[in-house]
Image (cartoon, rainbow, N blue to C red):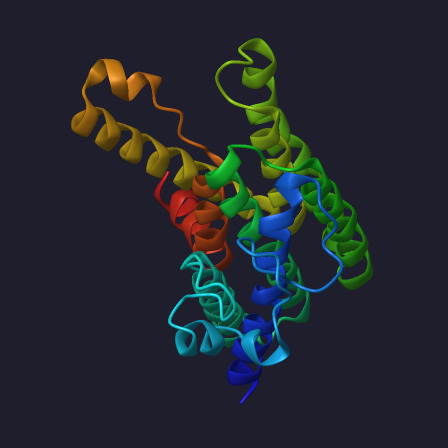
Length: 248
């Protein structure tokens, strides 16, 4: 029952995250009624039901017939699935449950915005950091020092290379890893490692498909890989750390 409620909440939150994804890069307010990007008509309430309305409208605006991106139901479904998984796995750990849900709520728009405009908005990372500090201190004051250290170390790990070579890693990625540390604690280490490995694998794939010259010129946002690593670490981060310590 709780998992179902979490999934439903994820659909609703995912609908709002679509607004953030669409408007933040344009500098528009996230408040106010949704409207069609083609004709500007306000979206009716019955046409704003997560996933269902998109299916019933066959992915098109009711007024002008302009195609509505598949990204909208994808974001809603992804948020719902992640919410349900977090509640199913961490439902008996209030601190981890709340921190993971909040982190995912920020990771989803960060991922899609970075894919779209190759930029991680400071307003999202700053808001996530402040909220993470407040929630971590309120729910688990004894563990906040570890999370602060993890956040600072993670930000420095990517921040220093970004400062040395601004054309390589962006400072937005460093800020994101710092935020991840505030929520994941020590599990941010495997999260970054997973992000790096998946990023390298995808980079090799791009080079293989486009050739060395074009592949090296292709800009690939790193935020989505870090977000993927963070999600994996939510569920298996501590297990990965324990395995490493036991093995080495």
